Amino acid sequence: MSVFASLVEGLADLVEPVFQASAAAVAIVLFTAFVRLLVHPLSRASARGQRARAALQPRIAELRKKHGKNPEKLQRAVLALHAEEKVSPLSGCLPSFFQLPAFFLLYHLFSNARIGGEANSLLAHQLFAAPLGDRWADALRDGGILGAPGLVYLGLFVIVAAVATFNYRRTKRMMANGVQAAPAAGGAPGEQQVPGLGAITKIMPLMSFFTLVTVAVVPLAAALYVVTSTTWSAVERAVLYRDMPGAAPAAAVLG
Image 1 (tube, helix red, strand yellow):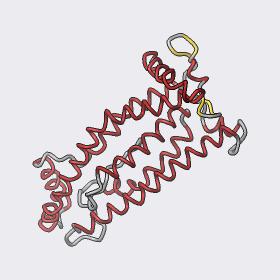
Image 2 (tube, rainbow, N blue to C red):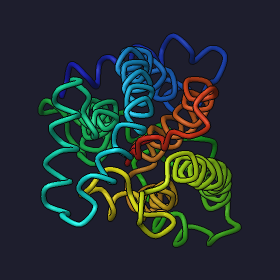
Image 3 (cartoon, one colour):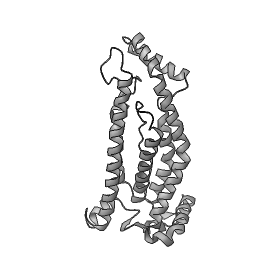
Image 4 (cartoon, rainbow, N blue to C red):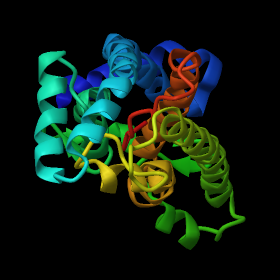
């Protein structure tokens, strides 16, 4: 933890001449960008997996025609097809899993008053008027929604809501196109083409809105990581999946 704290402090010292009191907040944004760059190869691999899954849809439609009256046999056949083609239905979750350690490091770093036996000096840093170690509840007690710290959170909520709305509309559109491209033979419109993923695909378009809850309850430093990562994910997916109108993008808790 102390090594990680030194890394954040070092980045803050580099940008302090320009950003002054908000240097640590900028350092967190830079750290987030660095993590996302490290994870980007996995995101590209996930996009390739989506293309591979899209290419399997005609064969899955054939399996539905053949085993449509036997759901268990159909599920085994679909999973065997994915295994045969070395395509994982959930490979898109890997980028999110690999970001979790960075998120929890930031969470614990700005939740502890002492680091390495010494006072945690990072807690004195702010994003404008909001301390990086505080939460939204602290901002509400210190001036309310329109107080200086509250306005910082209001700005973050606006960004998250805008990104979540963009992701919601795009995910719904892509999922709808995917169903229309290869409807289930003899099935109802909107029936899932990969058995066992029905619950995931129903909740998938709404997952970005859960980020609002995360931003509200974690320390501001961790919230800043989440907001930056979520925004990065929205732009990254728009680029990586731009030529895949029929593929449903993988859901991500951190974006």
